[in-house]
Amino acid sequence: MKKKIQGRAFVLGNNIDTDQIIPAEHLVYSLSDPEESKNYGKFALSGVPVEDSGLPKGNIPFVKDGQYQSEFKIIIGGSNFGCGSSREHAPACMEIAGVQAVVAESYARIFYRNSIDGGFFIPLEAKQKLTDEIQTGDELTIDLENYTLTNETQNKTYSLNSLGDVIEIIEAGNIFEYAKKAGLSPS
Image (cartoon, rainbow, N blue to C red; front, side):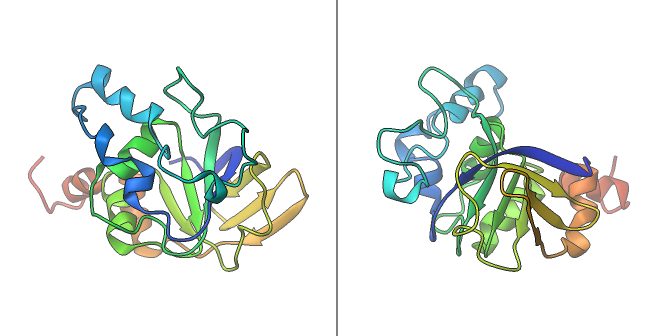
């Protein structure tokens, strides 16, 4: 696992649900087929209304037309991030689009666990509301040893909550690799 994650921020609001993260009409590709699954990247966050996206109307979307990956590697979210249905496709499409971390005020628990258990990206919780502090496009650095997020653009640092025991699952890569490593599952 990387000790630092660096990238541009994409700021979202509260209650971003799984149908906004990957609208149901795009759930037609196989996640197990590498060629087909890359299509999920181009539709990541395509259901988020413009007013909740942190971008002025007419500005660039999370993933540009014709692309499968986003230029934004870190999502800053409000409260209840990932609410809605428990589909694994939501965190999977974000990883396929290039997301390495999400920092939110709080998560829907099934989305949080799907993100960790599938090894899709690192879901972190902020100790304060960051959606008013950070702007889409700001350059960020997340330090996973000290649990801090630094906004390099604004030269401000914020504390993050510890990942606690789930760090072992993240370090192993996903829940299945962790179970093997811990002797909970046959190799």
